[in-house]
Image 1 (tube, one colour):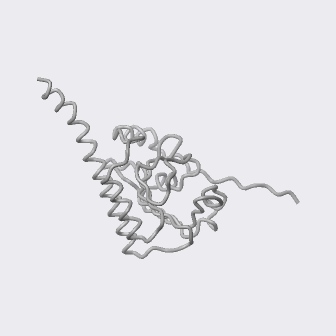
Image 2: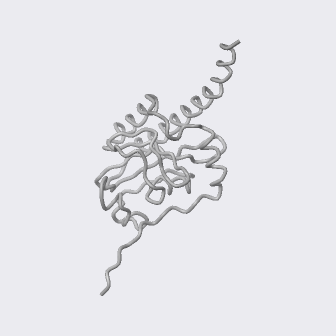
Image 3: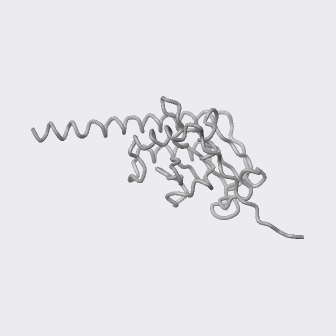
Amino acid sequence: MELREEKAMSAPIPENETQRLEELDSYQILDTMSEQAFDDITALASYICQTPIALMSLVDRDRQWFKSSVGYDVPETHRDLAFCAHAVWDPSEMLVVEDAASDPRFSSNPLVRNDPQIRFYAGAPLLTSSGNALGTLCVIDRVPRELTQSQLDSLEALSRLAMAQMEMRKILLRLEPDQSEEEAA
């Protein structure tokens, strides 16, 4: 009998991938320093959902990059391993995986089998006004579990706050060149 190692199931690429990535790039947020407003949102998500890990994940071309994190010190992972890439593929609802070890999409994923040993995942998409999902606000646990409806609703509300914060940040970036020109005059 031959033993073969299962391969992690990558998320399909969304049909709107080109537009989604262009819009993600327009926020000029990838690879930026941490910001207190986003760190506060992930801290609240972790607290409300009572999970050891909370992330604000942005799904780029080949990676998912974490703008903010609680309980996970890795700055990014490959997109092929990203639970959040599955949430971005179908952003019509929150992706909830109660036991990743028994879910065929994730059971062979190295992030399930090894550190951080993900068992539970809930990711609320970060949706732009044009409907593109840039990433998620997600919570992760190392044990299988469920969230209450109140926790799920709170996670969705926090994802909208994170998106509003990104919008404000984008507006401020556009205003900075105007302010620099006024100061130089």
